[in-house]
Amino acid sequence: MSMLDLSKHILSVGKEKGVTNLQMQKVMYFAIKDYLNKNGLDKFINEVYDEPFETWQYGPVVPELYYRYSKNGSMAINDKGVYSEDYSSMDASIKKHLNENVFKLVEKSHEESFWQEHQGEAQQRQEYSLKDIMGD
Image (tube, rainbow, N blue to C red; front, side, top):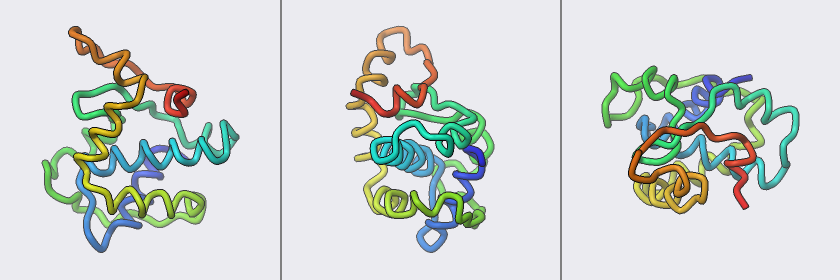
């Protein structure tokens, strides 16, 4: 289990409509946040979260995955993904966030205290811990 596997799962769940890189990043973030708020810091999410989000201009981004899928630009990622039962407990959250406007998700991610605290004038990227994602 890994963030890469979660990204492939999200691509699979969203394959009918297509998923952009920006959308995948925000859906991953909010699906993990929803999972944490429901289940807490359990073994599953600790295993999945092997590549941290960083504070980027458009909200939380996993750099390795951003660069992996960046060749698609703002178009849907040309990968149908791989559905995994391991992540099925996140499907409702994934589907909910896939149906939201991606720029509303960006705005919502900018309301998170960790992003606000680390996006000052210096614009230095900071890594999120799972506790940071859980929020207050």
